[in-house]
Amino acid sequence: MFLDENRDIQKHRDRLPHWHQGGTLVFLTWRLTDSLPKAAVARILELREAWREQNPKPWSDSQAAEYNRRFILPLEDKLDDSHGYCVLRQQEVRRIVCDALHYFYQDRYELDAYVVMPNHVHILLLLNDQFPLKDVVHSLKSYTAKEINKLLGQGGKLWQRGYWDRLIRSEKQLNWTRSYIAKNPEKLKLGDYSLWHKERRPPA
Image 1 (cartoon, rainbow, N blue to C red):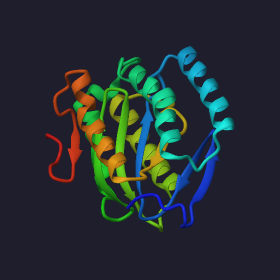
Image 2 (cartoon, helix red, strand yellow; image 1 turned 90 degrees about the vertical axis):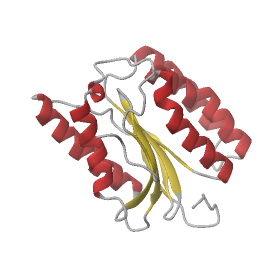
Image 3 (cartoon, rainbow, N blue to C red; image 1 turned 135 degrees about the horizontal axis):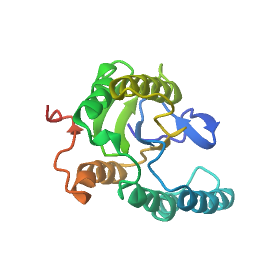
Image 4 (cartoon, rainbow, N blue to C red; image 1 turned 135 degrees about the vertical axis):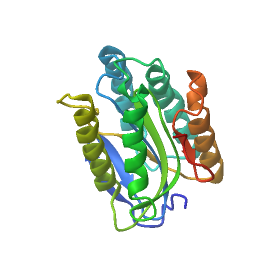
């Protein structure tokens, strides 16, 4: 369930480094193309890459916490400003994302929790050894982009290239992640807003 540094970790890179370890929980975020102001993001990413060079993985718990505080939470705060067109506010659009996540539930991965926000998606899932994370994410993003564009009568790029991911290391981190997902809609007073966890489905 948690990251085991003594087991094999599959690594690949698409601008950002990504790790996959079967049977391990992973926290994922991906976003719409217009969800963040480019100048602000560029500055955060520049600082992040410099920090990564000074702090190669695997990280200690304190390094992971520092990375989260300095580079992830600032981006999350900007996402929650609801920059861009926020097409995920529309119930029919959110439903496409929710249905896609559940389609391969208990086949390619185990869903633990997720929330669909106006311009981004947070997902906590348990990886399957036979389906690498990069393939799972590519399939979900490709399918939902096609269906959402069809629904909205538009073309072009919907999702920002790539995604952010973190393998869960401990019970403490798992509880924090579940709480973060659950509280995310509260920041914008969105109610349940397609919030899901294992005990309950999102509202219809």
